[in-house]
Image (cartoon, rainbow, N blue to C red; front, side, top):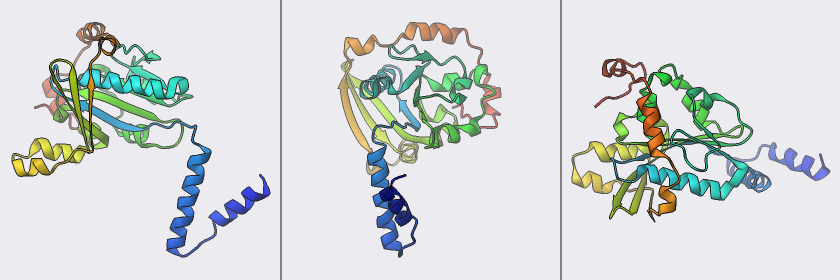
Length: 247
């Protein structure tokens, strides 16, 4: 280690008054971000919600395609719906537990169906926090779609960084509104128009569904796979230890 680096680290671990201590560590954060600017780290859960035809699957596809354009082969993409740019298919929930040599984005279409299948019956839900919130290692991010937010496992809902509501008009123009999960729950659960108006989205975005974007996934193959899955009964889901809501 160079002499300058030794002095720098000695300074960083020298205690100062609280305000100066804050400034010191913010400088250290800037130094680390500059030093590691090429390192990619992805984490957390994003969920696209909307009824059939509202554009949630194509919004997920647009996100994955954008991430591939930004990061290229610095990341892996795995999906359950045969996204054109995926590196591998999600074959089993154990794929989430594997330590990869790059950051991974797991793209799940209709995630409530996956976690209601017997394949996922033994999934250790308590590991979701460690998997998606851990900022160490290369990082794992889950990006998913669901028809209704409340039909998704409660643990998933509470770990979401963003809930993105999807709406499509004229069959081509898709509008997205992103919310914190708590704000979105308030939005869908309150009957008061005044309260709904006060819930502001974190971001808004619009894009046009091109034929190229629509051709980037194989919904027919996903449907065929879904037909072959064995699903939990309503009773089994309702008594789940992990509070899967069936409304």
